[in-house]
Length: 277
Image 1 (tube, rainbow, N blue to C red):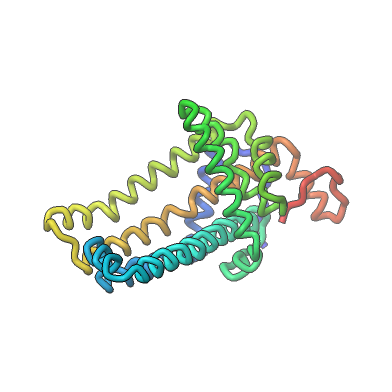
Image 2: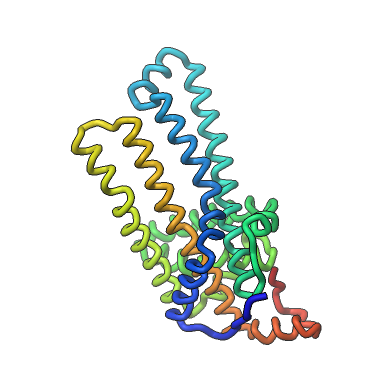
């Protein structure tokens, strides 16, 4: 069992711990994140290999209305499967971070095993939060940014407290009160990292394709592979940081460190204290 370090952390300490966990458990987090992205990669490369482009697609649809229905049906099926796997990957990452934070040793299989049907709950949370944030952006942008920051801990709260979607969003709003600025900095950091890594991995192939005025199957495949690698590298970082921030705010506001110590000693915790997986 790993050493447990439960204490209030500054934002700098949260970020430092995020990258330490990411570095020391890289293959675990990369493996979890890769699951949904592999599905997308295989579909994209398969479509490129069959020569499905805008011209061929338009011709197929014009020649056969049935082709249109097949494409729409296949697209919907792919979207459903992809969203489910995406939700499962995010939930599994939260469980892995929780195990590491509480001194346990996680595994890829165990992290995914704990997800089960909770992946659907992650999707519902993301949809609800997306609608809230989208509406907030319509109100002169700033309300949308505030809502984005205040709801950032909804998924960790839902997974670790086994709470429903709306309750988890409310829980996130309570925990992040007074800490929206720190949450915003985490979002900004992830966005900058995504932008930089995207340029490093995707930029060369995009430039080459533009210079050749054509996109071959080989270039498309390399673009998809580079995008896959970039997303696997960056994908876990935000979830790790927000999971640690969830625990950090619980320690600060609810004395979670004392609750955990009492539980480890076999002393019943306060009945009002939320449970943690």
